[in-house]
View 1 (spheres, helix red, strand yellow):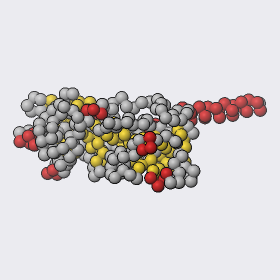
View 2 (cartoon, rainbow, N blue to C red):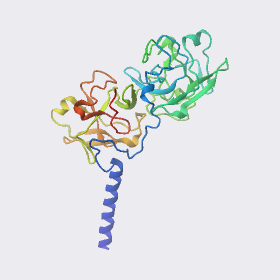
View 3 (cartoon, rainbow, N blue to C red):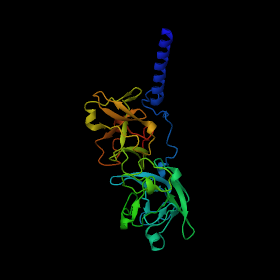
View 4 (cartoon, rainbow, N blue to C red):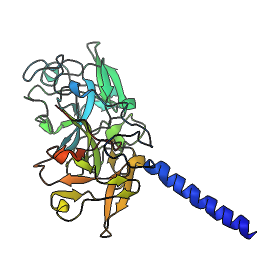
Length: 325
């Protein structure tokens, strides 16, 4: 009996190690990318060349009536996650429309100021559930794109991609959050995303961790303050360990652990917590400890990417962001 108990205990220990190994990939990927054990969540990520360089997208001050192509999620310092088209133009919803059933009430002069986005040629990048995309037939017979049931528009007075001049206009226009709700709201569930069938985590500005789109580096991870997060080649993912100590910490600050229920566009299976040598806890993505860079001046800055060729902006599945242009 004693031998059986010992065998069972040993078997349990081996099983525990195997589980931890599976969760954290089994080994460090020093100097190279590896397949994320929880699955690659980048299948909906857009080609970064479509962001800001789309020759078919409306130019600043020009026609804003073309297809959206790839809807992406941009991190705004004031509003949090904001939905844009492939060229970076902010997309809006009209509070006098309805989402269930979907119906547009913006016609005539209204549609001149707020061009409806056509339903064709629309897809969703990481951070936006493709199942929330739909269409509604307008009074002129044309089909308009919907997100979470809400008809989607651009604003004629937005001068450049990234502008949000339409947000709050007349108290009836709002930039769109990822689930069709109003950007900048603490919660965008319930009737804010009518027709979605479910709440989408991080639909408002309460997300503690978000997938954001960078025009050069693709889909990156930002904390609740919009700061881009990084991984360090001298750390290890198995065992999870941070090797940024002493003077390193003056420049690279460990990211705080997050609530897995407050993620926007990030799979909770990739989120871990690692204990540092001083006993504090640090956020890890796919078992890689992550940091924010004190040299980044504002939300969305990526000055830390490729610093010393050992620091890399991190993707939602824990990989290193591509080099950029």
